[in-house]
Image (cartoon, rainbow, N blue to C red; front, side, top):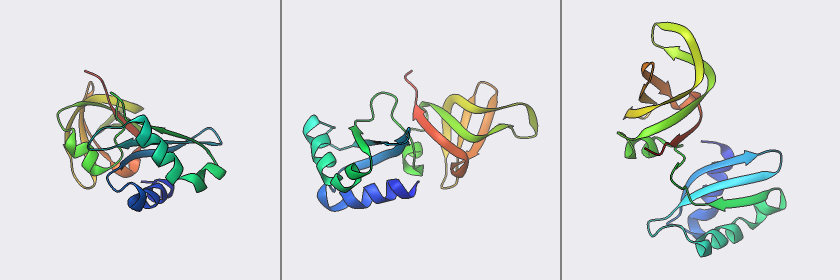
Length: 145
């Protein structure tokens, strides 16, 4: 998790305590994209309240607040654990291959999420089963089945 995501979560902790911050990312040089979820769903009114709660960040960034959608981002161990058994796309920071063999290292893997511990996820991708530490994941999301 990034320092920016931690900052957004802290700012929303009091203002919107039931909002779960799924992912915070800087897009381009000046857009801050925030994906949120809520037990009662994400409405336009909730997105507006979150936008107002993050007013100080709007001085530095163009702010986009959005629901997770079908291809929900996965950024925390609890997100991955919640969706074990579902298909996910995982992009790594550096190219990697399967344990013991590196004939075709790559940065993007799509397959069934078969495990998630505190330190890594396990994905059954088309080339085999691969374990990827959270620190090596640059971005991940569910894939519509």
